[in-house]
Image (cartoon, rainbow, N blue to C red; front, side, top):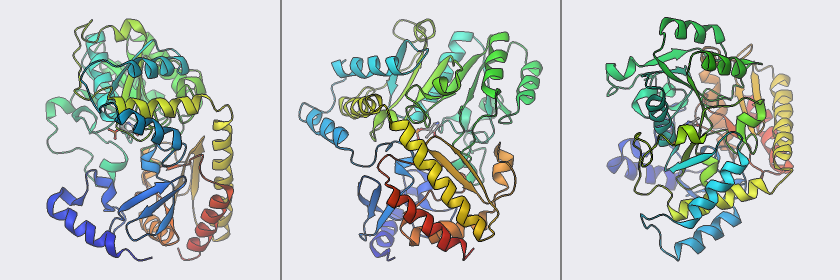
Length: 428
Ligand SMILES: *Cc1c(COP(=O)(O)O)cnc(C)c1O
């Protein structure tokens, strides 16, 4: 493949944007080479500035559950745009999407919209601290909750990829309030709670981790967290920025039958526009300004274009009774095919999968936490990534990322992908 225009555009970008990108993982630093610049996308495919076509497994890092340029979303945004793009006043569509989200997700009464997953998680923790009047939080190594200070402690994918789990600029004062636990290790969480009696406001986690590869929770892990939280007056926060409206209509609360106290959303909920949200039972949400005293605000929060995209997206998800079944079957097909051809070439690998999330780890044994995920062979991954790219398959440029399966993928696309994996596996 030729990347002539992408290379030139990257050079120009580097002059005026740090590293040439507005979010670090886009820069291909973990895999080497020059990032490709997107020009357009439709359905399962993304086209770059050199007119190369790729089958896309990044899908804007999650939002494009139903494929790129999904018609109902495109139409809704165009229509809304004609009526003005922002007012800073309440609009009817905010209530409509809120009603729909509350009806789809179990155990929430009220939801507030923000502009990103980062903002959602940051605000959820502030709310938990304000509600419980306690300062400390527990997060898990390898879980990513956006780039706000409290979370940049072993933060998974982006941060890990660059070997700077603790970013300069995060103060020691902030870091000391964030306690770090091992994912899928309930005893570790127990000992942290015992060592910090009456100090922990919340436990935040990705109920299915997606930022250290895809790591589902072990049986009962979420239930046991729930019990620990109940016993110690700690709020349980599910960060469903990646999994919300992706693994089930009601997300992981529905999938695993475990209630969270606060749920964070992003990605799919905006249909590709900048949207995040956090939600909880009324009793908790009423602590937010203007009725409560926990402050949180946003000039562009609930923006009409973003709400129109999100509403069209959620309606499509809600009205499609077979969607999650189809996604599961496609992902299982890909899993089976990749497993078969990698094994045939004698490549050591572990594949994790749940619903429409899947990750290939070039490592032996179970991948259940950050430590086991980090054992993957990064040199093998780099060669695999560039090989796949050259075959027209666009996977995330980091071994710590999940592949996202969209409904737009056909079985022909999946076969093409498996054939590419087979071809590249022979060269690894
Ligand atoms: C992407 C992501 C975030 C951050 O969302 P942004 O919109 O990038 O700020 C937070 N939590 C999880 C689980 C994510 O995957």
